Every structure is written in C-alpha cells, then in structure tokens.
Length: 165
Image (tube, rainbow, N blue to C red):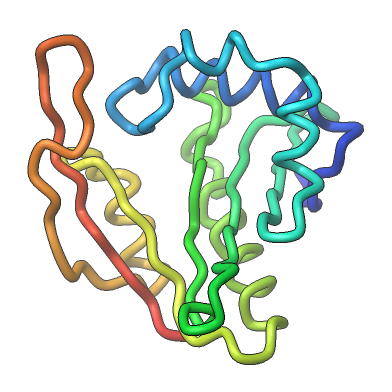
C-alpha cells in the first residue's frame, strides 16, 4: 500500500472511486451520483490539478482504493483554514489503516503550508467509523448541522469538526 498525491493522469480512477462512494454512501456527500456521472472527464482532471485543492490516493495492489482531499481557502481572511473533503475508502480494503494514513497525509500537507492554522471537516452523524477515525487524528466536534443532506425523503445531520495544526 502506498499514498501519493493524485494528478490528471489519475482522473479516470478517481472518477470511478468517487462514483462508487456517491452510490454506496449517498448520505455522506452533498453531490449525487447522478450529478457527478454527467460531469466530463475534464471536470475530474480539474479537481486534481486546481491550485486550491490537493487530493491524495491510497493504492492497494496498484489500484486506487482510497481518497481524500484538502481544500485551501482563496480569501485572504480565511487562508488560515483548510477543509478535509471527499474521504472514501473502498469497502473491500477497509480496516487496514488506509483511512488513518490518508488523514495523516492531509495533516502533513497542511503542516507544510505556512500560515495554515486549522483543518475543518464534516462527517455524517451516525457514521461512527469515520467520526472515531477523525477523533483519533485529533479532530474535535464543534457543532451539528441538522438536515444538512437530503437523500430522497430522508434527511441527515452533519457533525462539524476541526483540528488545530
């Protein structure tokens, strides 16, 4: 297993894994599989090459099996913050530490950016595995957003967490 920063050459595998994530866990993401399936490959490439986002991938046996992103703030007064986003580990490789290592990659990237003071994230209430992972990595809950995501007729709350660098 290894982790590396993704680039445009990974766009097809990134798209495939994110579509799997949207399909299997629709309550965990604000985008839907229907919305993202319609996006051209160039859109996925731009997600991996933008100046304000860094995306890491965990590879198992040469295949992309986990992903996480770090989004930087463009506005001057908010540049001390970044957001962890798009965390997903494929079901067939869970419980192997990939999620933990992906979060550690994000933390290392964040610490390399001078002036960055904190990372924030949201996690769907009830996703105990992810919530506990983030807590193990030093994140603290600071709020709860009720009815943050709607899937069909069901609403899901989001837990807001942060971690100082």
